[in-house]
Image (cartoon, rainbow, N blue to C red; front, side):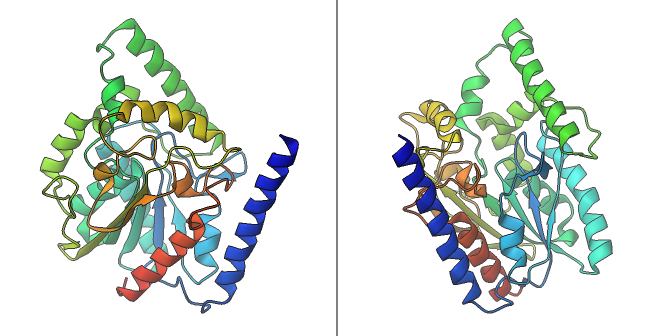
Amino acid sequence: MRILSAIALGAGLLCSTLAQATWFSTPSNYTQTRYPIVLAHGLLGFDRLLGVDYWYGVPGALRSGGATVHVAEVSQLNTTETRGEELIEQLEEIIAISGKPKVNLIGHSHGGPTARYVAGTRPDLVASVTSIGGPQHGSATADFLRKIPDDSAAQHLLGGIAEQLARLINVLSGSRSLATQDAVAALKALDSDGAARFNQRFPQAVPTRHCGEGEHKVNGIRYYSWSGTSPLTHPLDPSDALMAVTALTFIGKDATDGLVGRCSSRLGKVIRDNYRMNHMDQINQVFGLTSLFETDPLTVFRQHANRLKGDGL
């Protein structure tokens, strides 16, 4: 086991080194977008926690090619609307500081619908929205958890545990968000019914047919998405075990990254919806332990920044 662990870690480091070597061979302004890039985290997310970035290595990978990157932090557990309003406040500050009139929003998981809310309510602030593993039509895992009766002892217990965890993350990450953590409200926003209601209000770039592709540009805002379909990707990644369990809620439904179905993740221009990545790999977690047989997530981010640049964004 020690030998296998050493081999896996060595291979991971080698792949990372090769990827970074490739970056140096690209132009110095490879990721230099016209507008700043703002990263919006998902459920129970943060910007930095105990010295560890939620977007593990992503800001540095983008900045290495000239991009201006900001990392937002909103409520860990709450409605899409509440998180969106918090994000709008931060965007107004970023725009005032940068002098640029708009930003390129990139949201992971619940950060995808959160970015969509901002684009739908304040399109003047947004040049593009990119959703990574975002549940545009909800999550089967959320549907499963919603089977717990409202106001039941089980709901209060599990919701209370989740909210305490969210508060701890909020404090340890130094978040300035003062919103009340609400696990049930977050779950209702991420199940199929909640997503359907949200899509009625904000249909921009959502596919009109099952597993289709939405409009690439709506109201002057470009929309993109990508996701994965492999819950298990690395033998040393502790998140794989969790993804394997949550993936059970998708049996007989759709290929999944462990928390979001492939078809549910599709928004606007679909870059790819079947990366060999789980839900955490998409943000290069945990600690960069991702599949050795797939494009490095940091390279995917850099390629997308270059795509935004090519699209004049």
